[in-house]
Image (cartoon, rainbow, N blue to C red):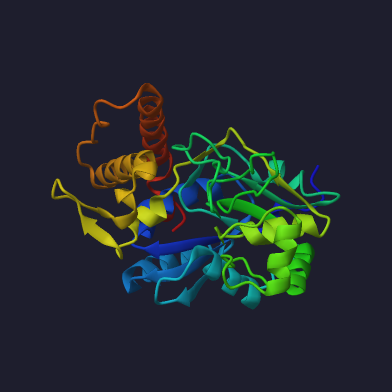
Length: 322
């Protein structure tokens, strides 16, 4: 059994743009399949979105403990989480979970059971569209989906993570870093330590520098996948209204979608968004794009089945708690 009771965990969920209207059902599945508490962290959301979050919190105050506005202008995911770390103390564990992760069964105890001994952080939730979680040869950065270095070193992930708070605070204080540290701005001695430890890159995604330094300080970081979790991946970025561009076919899409190396991520996110929109409004569900490679086609079919199941199970989660 885990040393820490999952009822003592508070997951920080960062919301951006208009994502709450669509992704609230994923978080409903997380609430239904855990005894943890949740804090809604508001990062540049419209007032109507914030009010919808507050209504949800009022309906289930035992589970949604707070709606915390950290910025009215869009800031980095790690920066938003760092503001929470500075402002709130939730006890022995600092935890975060993405709002596009579906839980099909209880999941928190499985992760807490690993947060023992010298293990100071446990992460999970590979994205549906991902084909590898290893930093590519010659890469100058460690992206969110890169959980491992090429020699097997564990960077861990930012999508679902539980930190031992004492170790997290000690490492951040010792090296002058935060969950939002990206690399260029870190202190010279910290950069030297990364180089000495063999993990120096130009830029790091949320929490990656902290995860490296936790291990340089003698801790252990575990990436552990759970079959009961389905992480779509990239949905918050898809719904973020800033940075939208018009493509050659006349459609509007996120600016990041122009890069060929994120094609699968974009296709999965767009299809998921269209499917969610149809199911929540009663429209005819879309058909997955034709001509996809078999592996991606299989992923689209899985997304379809999981999202249909999600909406059937949790469409009325708010009214059920009224």
